[in-house]
Image (cartoon, rainbow, N blue to C red; front, top):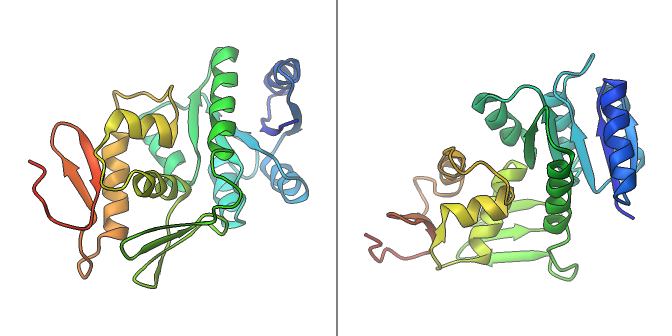
Length: 231
């Protein structure tokens, strides 16, 4: 049975989510503030953690930052009434996997939780490393090196690079990247893919390294180690 931590300070909202998840066959705990959430996450292994941003004491952003700093690899889904693009970008930048604005349909919440679970279980247990050119991803330790230089990536940047490596030398459309790195429900009208590709390029394709992430005009992006024209 999959386990979920619900970080929500509104008792009625938390109860609604917990009852609904229980009906769908999930086991869940509730944390009404950030400190309790961090304590529960350190004591139990959760598959998915839903986080409200406006919490008493430590806010949701700080909770997510600390979870990722502690190498917690649970899928993190932000549930918040704050729904601006800036809020979403900030959430993804610090390590959340998905963002669902309140109010939401419960069916969509379940769909997004299931998408996070599929993504989390998609890596074969025996596969711990991915390589392309001089880039190495350690899937178990969530570390990245290029030419033996360690590179610090956010959780979203890591998944983006992992997707590119798994599809190396094949053009990847923005739609497919959004569907696999975020989820199939992600709002494709935003430029989130381009924004995060820019973040990733700045870290992976440094001035002293051969550029690997290339733009395919009218399509999306490709990971390749040579300079054949893609125009």
